[in-house]
Length: 208
Image (cartoon, rainbow, N blue to C red):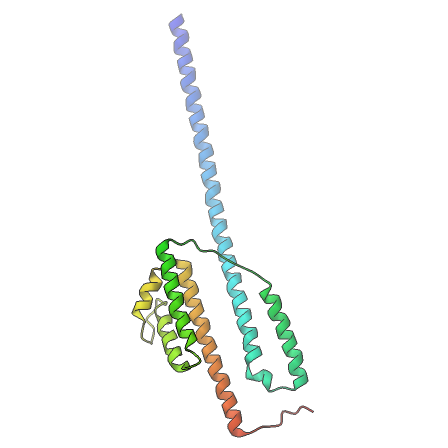
């Protein structure tokens, strides 16, 4: 009789332990599923923030293009002042929007990003002295960041540095180079327009 009771308690304990184990496994599975869903939402959030960050940069670039463009210089002083005030207001409102997507890096990636940034900064410093040479160098750096075969020489040393950077930093480096190349192109266009107008002489613009 006593043996039967002991065996019954043992069986009850085994069943209870087995039930708890299943319950813990179920809870663990539910938590894992929740974390998987949260991970997808986090990635979606980061992608959306990155897109907004890029949109902010594009808006700022467009405003600066208008502010520095020759079209603004070719209109009446009164209208130019009004448009400049509007552009400045839009610039201020855009700058008031702060978006930052941080990147987790190891020490090697930190060093690679520092090297890549330094290379670009050095070229930017020399742009005003020799814009054409600077543009060729920027093109070579940009060619090192694209997957398709570019029609310009590739800076192999810079490419090795970029590959060592974090993936998000690689995208940002490429985007910065594209922005710089557009700015150089716009600057050259404005210089050519101003020089052409100088050769042709002043013309009436219809303003009183």
